[in-house]
Length: 302
Image (cartoon, rainbow, N blue to C red; front, top):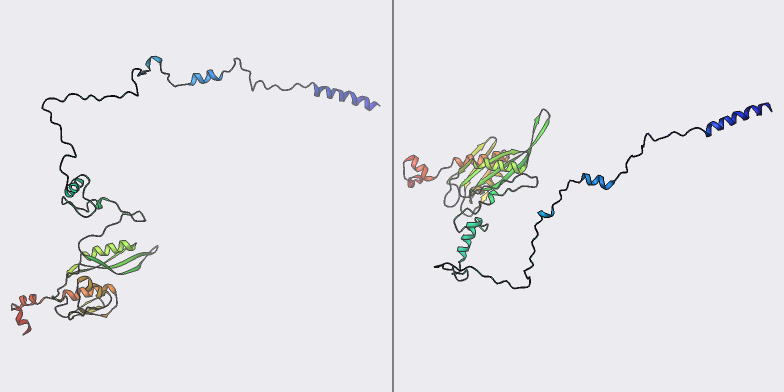
């Protein structure tokens, strides 16, 4: 009993402390406003749009105008001695050449390939930038009368310190099929660029081949370049070009129609093409030999 009488006042004092503990106030975090907050007054003070005054607005009213009424056009009186210009339909009809000349004078030469005023019809094509699929500008072929023929395209490598560099080598023969021919070679990282370089190099090395009226050689000839050796012989009309490899391409681009050719030694395409050029350069026309000897051409066959 003594223990229960001691515990009871202790529990009652503990319960009184729990119930009478004051709750903490949060008024210092959210103070009460002294004046009421007006949302419209705040936004009205922040508006920057200038308001137009009623006196600055100009409004026109057409009260005396009837929209359904027909308005009669009253032009001014022309001065004395005024001659009206002729109507467009009264003049003579223009011819097609006059229309084409007027159109060309305004818009430049036409793309049809015909110029009435004598202008260059390709002047507009040179101003247009033509790009390939890779975004690079294409170079148009030079129109100088020479045809191009690719003899060989090979992949070559160059061993450097960091590894191997891959390039392409192209051999191109150009000719006008009227006695002029050239052999060129070029290297680049792309095939198209290599062909263009070799074509430019071939045009720098153009030579003239002496031919008879039967489109054949005037006499036999042989030429060598490196380990390649080429033998050329004239042929009768109707024989055609009997040769192979680079020799045939060089002769066809030069315009030779009757000839015999033979590759002796190396089969390298570039060396055989250059050997053909060397053999052709050794040839001379009969009149040239007669002039060098100082005799008429009739005495050459005696």
